[in-house]
Structure formats: structure tokens, C-alpha cells
Length: 507
Ligand code: UTP
Image (spheres, rainbow, N blue to C red):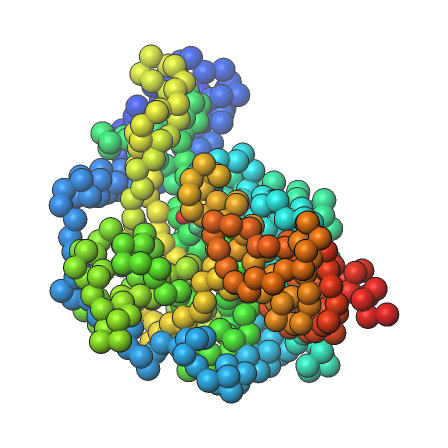
């Protein structure tokens, strides 16, 4: 009855937006279906919907024509604004780390996880953070990240003898909020204070067909998708997240993606580097592995910082080299950012509308004109997304910080049938790292055949390490302090160094 009453106004609004096809199956719907559909349609502003659909179609047409290349306006990040783990003196790195720990000890640092993605390439039905890559402990990405927060808090506490809290803000979407909340509840927030884990939801926007019409996923439901990881800035405002940060006295925020198994949560070195340079916005980068590697490059275009996608750069520019042989455009973006709270406030309250949408052409389940629900075998719709890094252009002082890929970046993107960024490559990345840490700390490893490991190589994406060792983040955040447990001792593969084992080893 209520639905009947509301339909006239909604129909008129959809006509204004040129989207009345969304009511195509109205007559077929039961009352519950009508209510559900009306509920969704009421949320849509006709003018915004009209613009959104027109924009999507236009962007799609433009993208199908020849790409615009920014090559001639590009310049690399100037050396004065580019820090590097491998090219800095040990003393400098220690000073940055000290600065980072100092800020953490003052409770001024938060981490913010972007976890609203649908993870379609990985192809699981639950949020990516709940995925386990098959480590001996069976830990999921969420658990690994939670334990790194616990450890970095502990390290700051040990240094400064004060209670330290690094709040964890988690941006979810309609797809990931409920299962993520449930998972954290079931796991008792992995030992974190539940009040310091703050989940919030980003907006969803309609997927648009190539004909410029919003798509129906079912007769009573629009096909909606999260508005991209750059939806962060609207979500911060929608959910009063910045006020929460302000109330806690947060000044610096470390933003990262859910899928990087090696992420250094609240990385004191990176935080300290950005704070020491007086930056309001920063990006961690890794050196590109090869010129055509499909990662975005952090650089300037017409003097403005941005990430240029690999597909936008010509081969000639991608292959340009410095006199020392290194690539000119080598700063690969890894979605790992530093922002001051002041910067986020300015973006969220004033500049966000200036961020453009990027389009992604995806396979979106839909109902045919005949009312049959279909799963397309080819991409059939346009999803519009904002990107988190598009705010670099607004920075007063932007810096980039290059870290070692084998230590800090291994994303889980694809199903295992792919040859990169899979559960296997992510698992190997972490096992190789822990293997290196044990070797460096003076531990000896015995392989599964009972032979002592002598090989000293340090990383391979295509092979497992010669001995499997997993170190709990609760024992070591980034390889520190392991000598007291493992020096001059031998361990058989697989070896798991968790807090209980660590206690035993000290006796
Ligand atoms: P990806 O670009 O890898 O997208 O996201 P995805 O949705 O996880 O995976 P595919 O493309 O469907 O396979 C990079 C990061 O941005 C987050 C993701 O959760 C991931 O941490 N993200 C992405 C959001 O938070 N919101 C979005 O709308 C999109």
C-alpha cells in the first residue's frame, strides 16, 4: 500500500533522470519487492542520477577512443622529495623511525584500511581480509594486520613507557561491512580494544550499461557498486570519522589496502620520514620491476603530483633511463599513503567534489528485458570509481618514500590460476621474509629432509624458501628482537615462532 503511494513521485523523478526503465518490472513485483526497490530508488537524486549515467556513458566512449598520453608533461618526483630505504644512511633511517615511534607514543597516529572492494579477481564470496593464504598458523590478512598493530603499540610503549593506542579505521562497503564486523566479533577483535577498531561504510553507486541506462541486477534491485577507494573522502564525512580522529588527538593517518600481506602498519619509518619533511601527503612506492610492469607511477604532470596509470604512458617514456641505468619513472604506487588530519579535513570538506571518476568496464549480473536473470560472460557495464591517490594534486607538500618490494609489498589480487599476485606469491613473500629474518638473527634452519639449510638466497616468487618459518607479528614487527630467541639455535621446518614458543626459547 505504502509502495503504491510512493510510486507516482518516484516514477516522475526517474523520468526526469531518463531512467524510467528501472520500473520496468514493477507490475511483476510482490509487495516486499516493491518496497525494496522503492527504498533504493528513494535514495537517488534525479539530477545526480542523470549526470552520473551521462557521465559514465561519455567516459566510456572517450576511453574507447585513442588514449590521451601525458608523456610530454610528465616529470619524475624530484630527488629532494623522494626518500628511500635503500639509498639512505642507517642513521637517517633510525632518526625517522624514532620520530615515528615518538608520534605513535603520543597517540597521534592512526591506520586506515581500505576494505570496501569486491575482490572480484580473487573470486571469493567473503571480504578479502578474511582470506588465509595458507601460512602454517592459518592466519588471515585481518589477523596479521591486527597483530602488527598490537606489536607496534607495544614497541612504542617499551620505548616511551606510556600506553599507546593506534586506532584502526576500517572502510567497508555494503558487501564487506557485516561479514567483517561478524568476523572481528567472533575473533574477539584479535586482542585489540574493540573501541579502537572503527568500521564505517562507503557509498554505493549504480552501475551503468553501455546505453547510458542504470542496470537492474534483479527485478527489484539495482546493480550497485562501491564508489572506489577514493570514496574514502565522502565516507569520512558521511560517518563523522574525522571528528572521531580529532577527539582522539590523531594528527597523522597511514592509509593502506587490505591485500598487501607485507604491509607495515603505522610504519614508524614512513611516518617519521613524512613528519620530518613537513609533508601533508605522502606515498610509499616501490621501484618498478621492469618498464612495462602494470603499476601506476607516482610523478608530476604539468608540475602537479599524481599517479599515471601504466596504460597511459608510451613504451618510450616507460623505458626512459637515467645515466646510472635506473628507470626515470620507477616510482611504482602501492596504495600506501600518509595524510595529516588537516589535509584530510580540507579534502573531505572542500575539495572532494573536484575528484574525477575513473571508469571500469565489468561483468555485472543483470535482468534481461524479458525478465530473465543473467550472468554475462563479457563485460557489459560501466562502474565508476574515485581513486584514493587522486588527492595528491591538493598537497601543499608531497613526498614519496621508496621501500624494498620484497620487504613491503606483495598484494593478493588474483586466484591461484594467475601467475602473479596470488595466494601462493603472497604466502611465499611472507615466508621468505621470515626466513631472512631468522637467518639474519643468527638462527639455523633444518629443511624437511633433516639437512641444515646453507643456501643464502633471499627471495623468489617462483619457489618456496628452503625452510618454512613463520614469525608471529606479536613476537616481531619487522624482524627486530629475534636474536634473543633464535641466535645459534637450530629449528626444523616448518617452524612457527609464536609468543608461547618465544617464551620457551628464552628459558
Ligand atoms: P582493488 O583495485 O584491488 O579492487 O582495490 P578490489 O575490489 O579489491 O578487487 P577487484 O578489482 O574487484 O578484483 C584496492 C584496494 O581498495 C579497496 C580494496 O578493498 C583494496 O584494499 N577498495 C576498492 C575500496 O575500499 N573500495 C572500493 O570501492 C574499491
